[in-house]
Amino acid sequence: MPAPLPGGFPRLDGRTVLVTGATAGIGYFAAEGLALLGAQVIIAARNPARAGAAVASIAAHVPGAVVRHEPLDLASLGSVHDAAARLSQLPRLDAVVANAAVVGMPSHLKPRGERGPTPRTTADGFELFWGTNHLGHFALVAQLLPLLLDSGGRVVHVGSLSYTAPKQPADSLPDPSEPQSDLHKYARSKLAAMAFGFELARRLGDAGAAASSVVVHPGTAMDALSPARAGVGVNQPASSPALRPLLPLIGQGKHAGAEQLVAGVASPQVANGQYWGPGGAFHLRGRPARLSPRPVVLDRDVAARLVARSEELSGVRLGV
Image 1 (cartoon, rainbow, N blue to C red):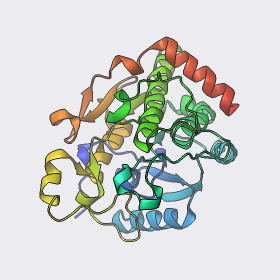
Image 2 (tube, helix red, strand yellow; image 1 turned 135 degrees about the vertical axis):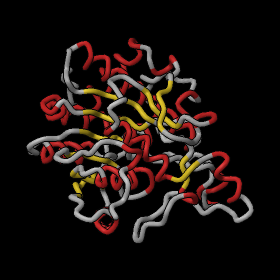
Image 3 (cartoon, rainbow, N blue to C red; image 1 turned 180 degrees about the vertical axis):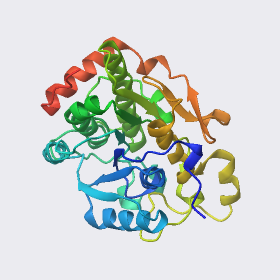
């Protein structure tokens, strides 16, 4: 008996979807869910061994799946440009799920010698979280936008509940030497990514384009509550046995969090400029629901400055 379609979404046969960071966690389960709907899935990731394991796992769980790996390191603009040049040769591209992220880890979970803020940069000298999570995706999306405009496709930007934490505006450029925690750097990068997602939606709408841009967030998604996939790694340390019974009260598995990403691509209810996430208490868990973003990601002046700065730093024009 065939596996049920994720969330009851319609089939995606004949569609091609690119998912960044799909070698583990939410990105992996989003890729698996999209393949189950019949989409041709391209896993864009930097590690060929992890990508190969993800491709093999999807093939094992989704008979007949069409899935492959595209080399991409979002922390290197050179790699982004090269990948975009190859992907631009595709006959069609229907969606980009901008999911990959450098994830912040609380200091108490780090190895003792690595606790506290760790200044790290991309290959191009930008603060690692912002340069990867926002600027890398900006450069990728901007270069693939012509394909998406041709197909009437969609960009699904993966945000985070942490976007309201930073005091800096979305267009601010983080200094790698600033003594900020990894969680704060992560939140700043997601603030920028989400502001870009809503600004892209406005520009597409103003231009009357058939393509669309939406923002989703997965809630609190945990490896400890996720089904195991052979060869596919986890991004979070294992929880203690004493805490495990409490986890379903505050979160869900990454397979459930990934449903928000799949909805962003496949649900006919999702439209340009919308924000979706779990509909449960505090939006930590639950089925996809339309949410209302905070004003901090909707300021057009700030977003316009963010786009202009991102174009300058990446050397890529948005083109809409």
